[in-house]
Image 1: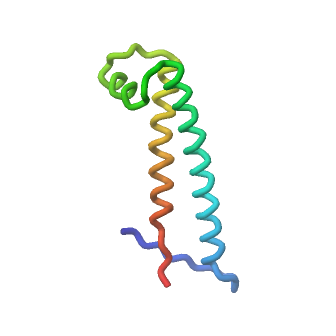
Image 2 (image 1 turned 90 degrees about the horizontal axis):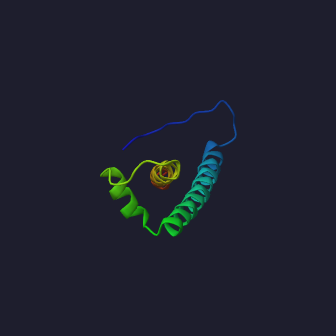
Length: 96
């Protein structure tokens, strides 16, 4: 567990500002996740292959590298990073 302490030279409370900023960032991440999932569905429909199966075959070098496949694996990896960041934000709790 990590702990973060914020201080400000302003009289205005920080907590509402930080909560709003974190909430906004989470909404942006969720929008990015939805867009990336939609892109993955396009690849799956185009190639008739689930992303999970594609990744398995790609990582086993059963698929020749193409620009489209590089984009597909890139979207898959982006989705993992976006989900990880969103999960981190969801796990933030404010001490009272």
